[in-house]
Image (cartoon, rainbow, N blue to C red; front, side, top):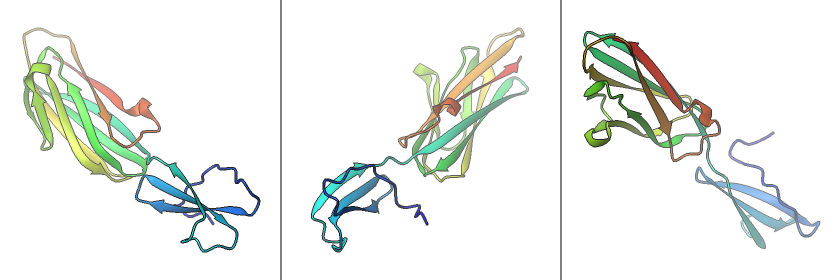
Length: 171
């Protein structure tokens, strides 16, 4: 039965007496020792090293709501797995019709670029985190205000199609 800490490596042994022994090291590296049949795994004769990247499918869902003269934007990030996502960053460039008011802990605002950046050191597989950004609405008149955001991580994402989301409010 398969072990979750062992990843397959496609390797062509050079001699029929060789076998592959895979040993997980950390969360991103697999060390594949090519051994002679019958040898103790701690005493490899030759070594083949393969890098296996952790993967974390991050999904961002953004919603927007009016609260008086403010637009409240909620950014929900979920790690669909299979691994822990490291150095998660949500980036939200505010629309020109809004002015930054506040944001959740873990978020910072860069006024020259009108960008809110929210960070999480790590997000476990199956876990979720939410951030809220409040903006005031500038000017008068009606119409829709659309606000988009994206999420990224230092961990590889097998499905980047769900890393961006937008929401809109009508003023």
